[in-house]
Amino acid sequence: MKNELIKKAGMQISIYMGISMSFFLSLFENILSGHFTLMLFLATFMASTALSFVIGFFVPMGPITAAATKKMKPGSIGAKLLSSFISDIIYTPVLTLAMVVLVRLMVPPQALNNMPPLPVMFLGSLIPALIIGFILIMILMPIFQKIVFKKLGLNYPPAQRAPEE
Image (cartoon, rainbow, N blue to C red; front, side):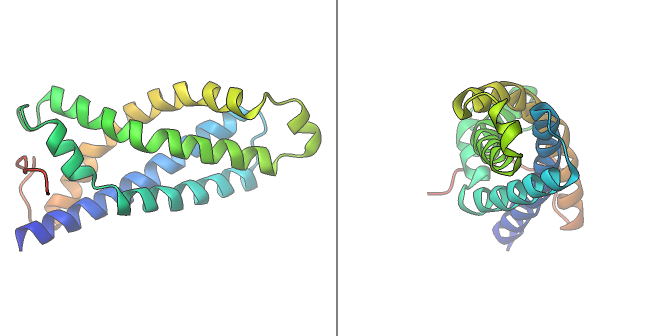
């Protein structure tokens, strides 16, 4: 029963994080592109949110971060930093690439002519997006964990669990 609640909590946290990260990264990427429009923002936000849900559904973040931090004290700053870094490295490059491609597909042709090539644009967006993503994960993850764990009647901070085989 408790494992089911933990999995349910993980999925809910993944949904909250996916929406939040998609919102802020879409906003950032659109502003960075120099061609911000509401339609472009909404398109990248929706695509990024859908993609983050797919990643969240297929990538078992709980077991991955539990395995990576198993020798660390649960809830310690080191464990939080490592968990945030792992989430950032998994999500942010995929979301950033998707948003850069979508921006390039949606801007007018004359604007595309003034943009750098896709690899340059992606790499130029990736570094600041990784920094922003890491900061957002560090701030938002504990907030969403507290909300979800309280709602489900679980203890916070969660006890470190063993990686699932």
